[in-house]
Length: 302
Ligand code: GRG
Image 1 (cartoon, helix red, strand yellow):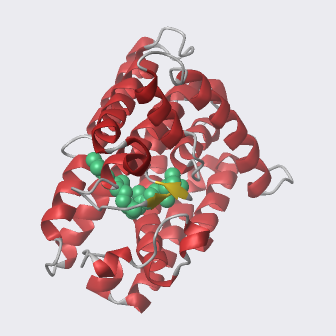
Image 2 (cartoon, helix red, strand yellow; image 1 turned 90 degrees about the vertical axis):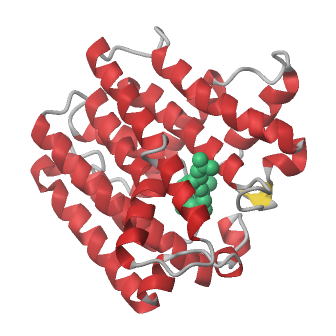
Image 3 (cartoon, protein in one colour; image 1 turned 60 degrees about the vertical axis):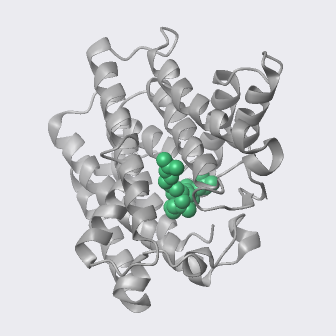
C-alpha cells in the first residue's frame, strides 16, 4: 500500500484533508438562505466553526490505508462530523453540560436560543443519514453503504454515544468503578471514533483482516483520545482548547484521572497509543499516516 506521508508531514496532510472536508461540509449542508433560514444558519454556525475534524480524518485515512479512494469515504466523513457536531450542540445545552463556549465561539444555544439549538442538533443528526443515502454520495456498492449506515447508527445511538452520554449524566457526583468508567468512555466517545475507522475501511473495500486491524487501532485510539481530553481538562488552556477548561472538576464528572490518578492516566494513554500503532502492522506503509495521527493525539493541546 502507498505511503500517504511520502516525505510530507502529518500536519501538511491534515491541512490538505481539512480543506477538502470543510468544502464538502459546506456543500452538503443546506444553504443558510434555505427557509426556514434560522435552523440552517444555526446548523452551519456550529458545523463550520472549525474543530479538528478528527472523525472525518479517521474515515478518510482508514479508507486510504486499505487502498480506497478518498472520494468514496467523503460522504461518511461528512456524516460523522454532522453527528459529532450535533452531539456537541446538545452536550452544551443547559440541561446537559451547560457550556457557553465551544470551538472558540459562543455555543449554539447562546446565539440562537435553546429551542433552535435542540432543533439544529436534531436536524444535523437527520441530515447525516440523508447524506449517506443520497444517490450522489459516491461509488460505494449498495451493500457496503448499508453496512456503513448501520455502523454509524449503532455508534451514535443508545448502545453507543447516546448510551455513553446517559451513563455520564447518571455518574455525575458519583465514584465510578474502573470497569464502568471504561464502558462509559467506550460508548460516549469511543464508539464514534471506532466507527470512523471502520466506515472508512468499509468504503475503501477493506478485507476482514484489515477491518479488524483498523477496529483495534480505533478502539485504542478512542480511549487514548478521551484520556488525553480528561487530562487537558485539568492541565489545558481554555483559549488554546476553544472551550472552558476545568469543567469536569467543577461538575464532578467521572473522568479517567479521577478514577485512576493523573500519572496512571498519562501512562495508559501512552500505552494505548503504542498498541494502536502496533495494530497497524498488517497495513504496511498504508498505516504510516495513522501511526503519525496516533502520535498527534498523544501530543494535542486542543
Ligand atoms: C449529547 C448525545 C449527546 C452526546 C454527547 C461526545 C459527547 C457526547 C459530548 C462531548 C463532551 C466532551 C467534551 C467529550 C470529551 C471528548 C470529546 C468528544 C471532545 C470533543 O471532541 P473534539 O475534541 O472536538 O474532536 P472538535 O471541536 O475538535 O471537533
